[in-house]
Image (cartoon, rainbow, N blue to C red; front, side, top):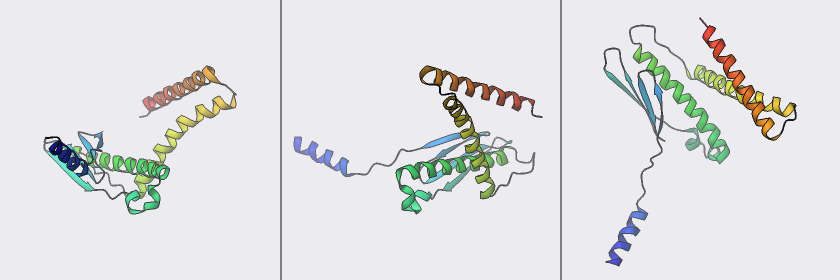
Length: 166
């Protein structure tokens, strides 16, 4: 009996398990799910029909081994995820608003510009409070409280500006 259990354990250890690395995000009237090799978007049309879009993903880190180095891989994966997320949002907007408005059509360059703007704005919200606190030579609890207060103030000003937008 012990020999049989050892054989079964050895066989199961040799068998390669499928990757369960999945992620996703909400879309307008739908959802996007992404695995290592595929992206699937499911969106509800105005007539309640569900439209599914499946795309194969060929990551830069798998095509070019030099980009698979841990630090670079993280940067490339973040940019690819942002690109695919924007692409999924455009698909969902076009599908869920079908017939109501002209479809949104963006090429890869325009999506890259949007992605860079998002990264830049995020960096702005993260780096300005950090540099202000360092410039004032704050340390410890004062550093953390000041940085949090600046971030919160920036966020409130941002929300006020957005609420005034027509």
